[in-house]
Image (cartoon, rainbow, N blue to C red; front, side):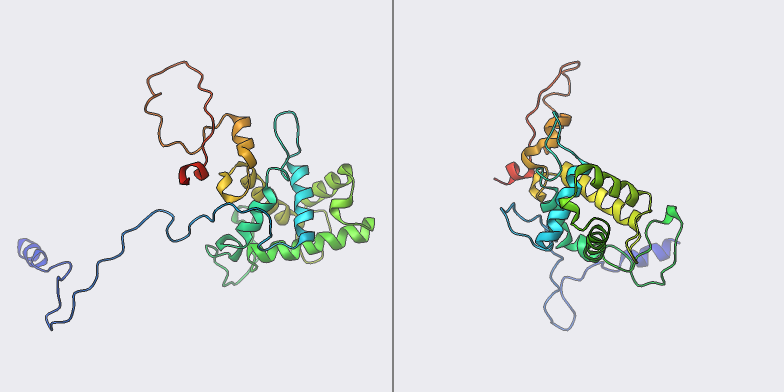
Length: 234
């Protein structure tokens, strides 16, 4: 074993230069957090992926999932649609982290959705199916329905009891619900959580560097003003 270890130790892990006089290989680039997929800076107006009709429907859904009350603004005003639009236009919408080569089978609930479509495709197909259903049943779009009817439709979607053609309504509902929640709670740098509304409601301090100055102050209530990554970048 000693001889083997000695032999291994004598082999250089990285050559400084090749033996034939060729230039030495460059060292790998230094890793930096977020460099490969940086967050886009906030922008006002303009949709990147969603159509105007899709955005209107999503805004109405967001306001039913997170309605405005005395504690906070609703999902639409909080910018959940802008958040989802930007996510669908990026790597999330393209399903970059998903395995989609098949074969596709109807999995168990514990296995999650078995779907060959990307999240962006699921939104496009699903919102079109929802629009067709609303026109068929009520003669108008989802956003034009009263709140009670919208709630009934969403309840049927959640129970997988809404006929949307080839689209399973429950997985679509769960995807939209997840993304609306993310848009409401995420850092405003991603387009949602306008004025850090959800953080102010919850008392969440945001993206602060550290809390070393407060660690030994027991039993005190700290009314921190939330800090966004937008503030850190400015």
